[in-house]
Image 1 (cartoon, helix red, strand yellow):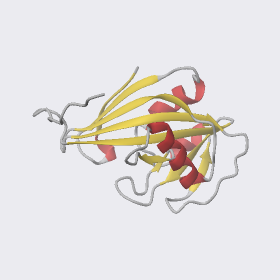
Image 2: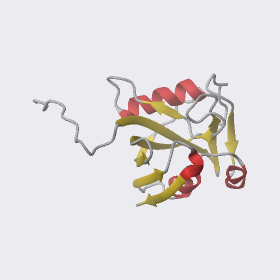
Image 3: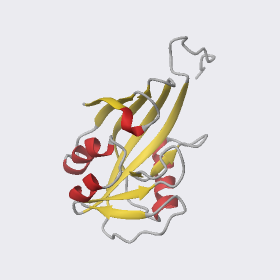
Image 4: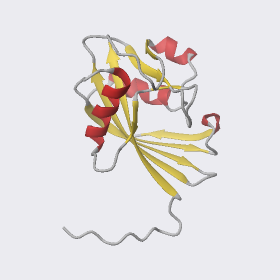
Length: 166
């Protein structure tokens, strides 16, 4: 197969980041990690991270889940979330995966502390604003694949200005 030479669209994003998020559930609890490094330092988020060169999204999600939690849960593809940062032109494509863990034992992570959070606890944690919007669908509608878009005014997570989940 021949691939065309790269010619960025002049009105396109300044940079595109490819990432994964793994929503692992044990009962009604979700596994979260408190990030210690920017851009999300201090916030609780689902485990996941960058897709390395040569990896596909599922391989990256499995690797990130093992590295950050020690879990080797069977991940299912659940959708894609697009995050747009208007001020910088950044564009994040996040592949969403979910799994059910039969054993809640996790391994401490250098990426940050881990916790199993019930729905009410998630609301009380400093989570990224898109997490509470994604969680109900990913937890309760296991057969649904979603397409989500989150628009932020700036890189500050408090600047979420639009959210759509289809």
